[in-house]
Length: 489
Image (tube, rainbow, N blue to C red; front, side, top):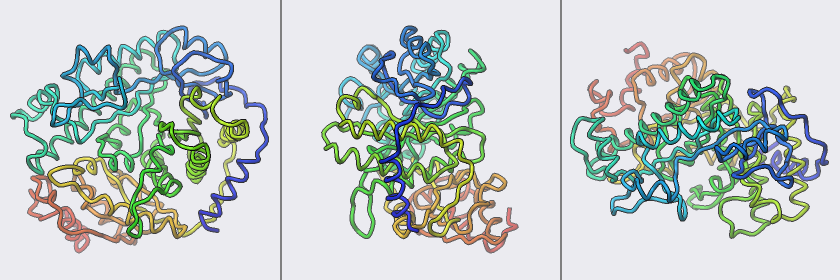
């Protein structure tokens, strides 16, 4: 059975599933399986019977209004800010080379994670916890490769590198150092929020909501997925995949087109394998509509089903953010679509009770990789060719082969590569940040694994990193030398 057949069958099941009464609310803050995101207080027409609600506010009345109706309240806070903050902190805005502060629509400004931004976030979550929130969840920790020219970032460069700021477009090394610093600043902000919440109230769940690495790096956004996932006080991740990310055009057989189901499958795979076997809970997001409000209802409906079904192909994940912003959904969508969404929510609520899964699809055990370092070589003066990633994934998905997207930094962990028989790897898109990664790959091959190594010349090979210090022209050359002599240190 092909993956497309699975898609069709699952769509039909979802489309005609009966509406049943919601499962009882989970009473333990660690056990909710469904949630949704809203900026307002309780409204009867938004009472969609999930276990939890993500309240985008620290307001006491809003939090209490949901808690009084039996919802577990999770509080969200964005890395962006509004007019009230930016007017006195313009130097903290993510600024492009031409001096423009980057925005996500009018009045929503991307910010550099400075100390004042971190302090504001910690205070926001402290307030929410005091007012009854059971979880903290910063969302979309995004730093654009286009940014890097604000006074606050230049100051951070000087403090971190102990040298004058360099224009990130001036050299390969400047670009690499700029993006690594952006990643560190994001890491510092997420860590500060998680640590402060743990001190404030240990029982509060500590979450972060982020897009997949596949999406962020394709959109030229820096975020250190692996480093943040490894934070001891981070317990849960909401993997933000929906129509708006998955419909991003990519190239297959020479055509740059939207491929919502295929791209969503690859994104969900990336997120699943990021946190797999860490004990950290992964949630999957889907959205019945999307941020773009100008599409047809048929477009929304079709793409919602595609992302939904892609998420269900990873049954190890059984927690879901079933939608953001119900106020832009209900009252706009047709009644039949609303009924289907209700049926789907009830089905997702029950997914964790189904422990036996049988796969019926193409060959399993094939994987490729992403790494935090993919974000560090995505822009001027030399942006790596992202088509090579799609070239290692889309052809297999179109043949019904469920290729997995693994996290390169985790190959050093015992048994992380155990599910795989074949690895597809290129260091043109990313670099192993330490030699132990190459050593682990070589040992895996020595134990019987098959590694297909792609790529060639890449300007980032010339960086003054560990491989050049070992006398190697590239990390690929280092890996090949270990494959000839796996015992090499």
